[in-house]
Length: 261
Image (cartoon, rainbow, N blue to C red; front, top):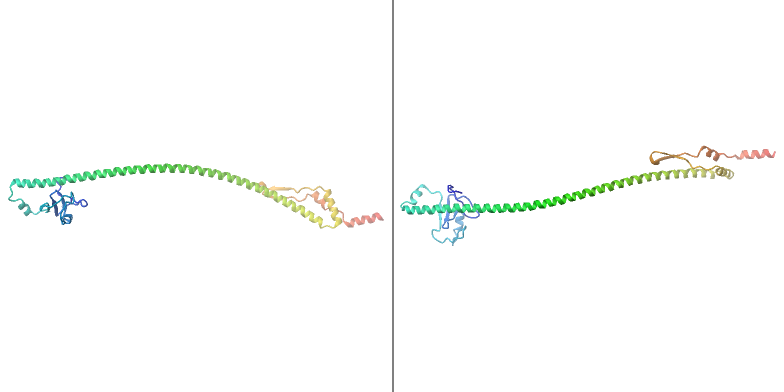
């Protein structure tokens, strides 16, 4: 606000509105809008809301029109001596200058308070940024450690997978060996059951033939990878021939009859 400004502001702390129409002027050089002036100065004793000064005089509080008419301007100072007119105008200008000075002081105070708040906010912001930087650093370290842990788990998983594959291969081999032994036992068991089903004199010859003929283990051939599937050869032709070749009872009785004759 400067001297060329034609509007004052209400001095009520929570108002600060531009004055128009009517205003309340006090002897302590303060001015208030019509709303707050009517409310504050209706109580007795009256005190100034701005400086808490007592306003007990008859002319300590005046309600004035801010835009007087031309007739009022022509008659308010009429008939007064020039020195009185100059004194009145000097006091009026002093009141206006005081209001301008008070407004400048208030603006400077507001600016200082705003700068202090800004510095405080900058300080808080700097502290928050430092805290965020520390948190980010800690999170980066945690991420790095988690990456290391994940790499360890990947390595362990790879080792476990390799071990599992090796165990599977061993299991397949053992399964193949088990199948071959089971099939071999099945072949030997079938031969023994056939021998036991023969008559007594044929069983003896068959057992003798089995004892005379060296038993051979059945051969097997692996097909596929790591013996996954196997098939076996039955008894060889020589073994089968020696196993099933024996003299019939009819031929033996005929031969004994010829010798007796």
